[in-house]
Image (cartoon, rainbow, N blue to C red; front, side, top):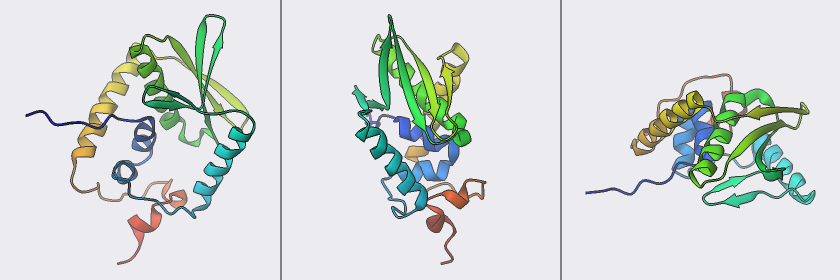
Amino acid sequence: MMTYEMPVTGTDIWYYFICKREAWLMMRKIAPDNEDENMEIGRFIHEYTKKRGKKEVDVGHIKVDRLKKIKDEYVVQEIKKSAKFRESARYQLLYYLDTLRQMGIKAKGELTYSEEKKREEVVLTENAKKKLDETIDSIRKLAKQTTPPSPKKIKFCRQCAYKEYCWAEG
C-alpha cells in the first residue's frame, strides 16, 4: 500500500536546520506565539517589501521572494533579516534551485541579508545536492514521527516563538 507524502517545503528546510523540534511543530501546524517580537519583525519585513512592489513569486509548489532574469539566466533571491541562520537560508534557497531545475529552469541563487546589506551567491553543486537530498529524507522521517523530538537548549531558543511550548514549567 502506498502512502501519500506531503511535499517538503522551503519552510521545512529552513526550520530543520535551526531546530528539528521546531520543524516538527511547524509541520504539524502547531502555531507559535504570534505576538513574539521576532514574528512581528518578520511580518513587518514581509509587508514592507510587498509595499515596495517586491512580491513573492509562486512557481509550482514553491514561493520565492524574488525571481529575476538577467540576460539568459534566472536569479532566485531569498531575503533574510540577517546571516544568523545562514545554513538554513542557504539550503532553503538550494531547495528552490533544485525544484526549478526539476522543472527545466536553470537558475542561480542569491541570499540577501537586509540588516547587513550583504549578498551571497548560491549555486546548486553536486555536493550541495547530495546534502539537500539527505536533508529531505531526514525531514520526511521527522514528519512521520508521532511525537516531537525532545527539546534541546540551543542558542536560538531565546528568540524562538515556541520557547514557552518547549520550556514552560508544567
